[in-house]
Length: 507
Image (cartoon, rainbow, N blue to C red; front, side, top):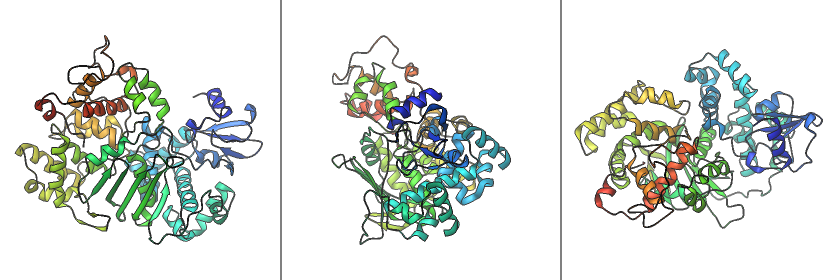
């Protein structure tokens, strides 16, 4: 977007752009979200920034009226595969809090000086400022959503001391932590349990079908899901955690409520970031639906399910294992195999609500996977070898990868092909433009939406375009087109057992 496109957005107070850029006003010294209800400033007094950190580094403070930190994140960090986008995914996951700037730079293959120069040029702020803004946002969320003690919030948000926490909140928000807590619209009441409950901001519309996607693939004892809820135990850098997300379409604002049953407070920023990635809450659904809905093959599907989301991954290594197991078999068969494999996992130290186990680590899979898994010996050997490579560090993947890097790492691995690489890219790094052309369910979905054989008459008849051409017309949102096609395939009547058995399991 150029200056005038952004200026028109703030003049219209368009909520779609909240979190995608920030408006700083020289005459007031304040930066706002695009939808701020205050009077539109004169264009000559406005500067737009990519991040709130850049606005703060330029000497501006957050608006007390619109609270620019209380917005969904920018979808650009998934769309962008450059160093800036990769760095922001890692910063949001708490890498700087754990490993410092040197650790972040090492993961990206740059020196800390080079990385600082790149991020300052691209985003207007260096890695420390960007991490500081992320901590401030987490702190604000906890202050207005929980009754946690201020000292606990300080360390949970990633600050190294209470003094640093107080100074940062004061500089960014021009308020003390206590005053900021007083701005909460709905003051939380102390609960009988020690659970933390937070509302997760997102951009409308939101299609809750992602809950069914996750529930269908849930591993008993590790995950539990319904069409409106998902619960999970997982391993984080400082300990085990457990959470639940609920969606209430009938409540005012249609909230997504995150309840954290157990977590080491040092892992809280990472958990919040991963849950947001899992539910794709930083997506721009209006832009995505606009592009997909313009394609006649997808128009009816988009109209019936606006705001479809692309599930992310809570653990990149786990997702690779699940994708390899899910190749060429049904979702049900993959879930059975993963349930068998889960016996190699450890009991969860954060057990509760029927979730008492953790997904096995790569080392545990390498040790016990050969005995627990069933199927072709060659496939099992490939999986065990991959787990061993992950356990030793010979194979590494994470949120800081890009699509090209994932291909270079994964294609040489025995048992991994283009489908697996594309699927991992969709779910681990949120790559928005992956089209799995050889996926059986994608082909079934195309037939279903075009009114072909086995579709039950759904949708319009196919147009003159080759349905296997790759849907290049809807780029850069082909991953979301894939989600619609998978859903159409799942909803279509199965004409033969062979069709059902050849559908790949998107685990």
